[in-house]
Length: 355
Image 1 (cartoon, rainbow, N blue to C red):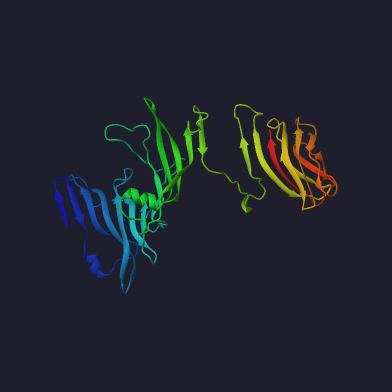
Image 2 (image 1 turned 30 degrees about the vertical axis):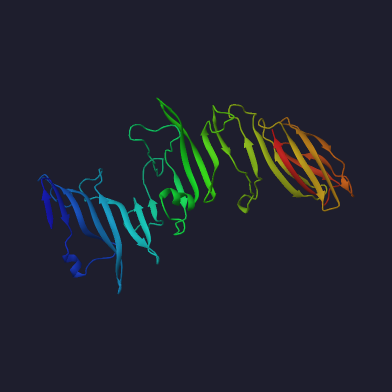
């Protein structure tokens, strides 16, 4: 059936194909096609097609069929065909999980409830814009430019207004805040909020230009919580560390890391890698301990000139407990190893400040 008004037309599918039982799985069943005609198109259903809403039969059983709803739109690069798939809607799995796929061709799997795919000949990747404004202007200071909230949808939480649900069911929120408005644009902060319970929301992290109030004229970040850097099995060769780098100077790197090792007397264990001209030396706050029988704390100071073996001084307290007094010597030039004399079976723990 075709319905036309002026140059715009709507064509609905032919039910004869349904009655024949000849429909193949995963093949579009004609639904509604939106057409434009000026009398010059050879095949109005393809050349004149602007968009269509079709269905796809994906499976059949004695209980009935299942399928997808498919939205297709004419491509500007190929106007002679009827269009390509833009969006697909379906259910998936035994619990009928909803699926919305944008940019997927027929037979391509849609893996999550909302799945987006784009193919472009550039390095940008898939982009999502959250656009916000007030009716009469862009924004006021303090406005949010958009947010994403992670919630648990439970009947005990989903009561009352949207605001109440957003509080009681929320786990975390990625938010934004407008901090500056000028003729050349706006500036703002990205915020990470978390909930302890339904009445306690906290801003854990804020980042952006001026986010560090101690240095307002620079990019920065602030956190209201603690930071625990964990060394896991995937990074077993890397020590937990923090690195401070000033890119305008070649010798301005400062690195803080930790080191732990059980000592075999006379064996060198490597605690730092010096890279000239970035590094000039290191300060290592350490403790040596041997079970409950003895321990020692101190500070090692290493100086490095990029060529010769680093020089070392050891400022330490007396050993607590019994046993020999361990001492350090240095080994290596660019990769620095410490050797411990009379330190067998001691454990070394150190906080390394590489400068």
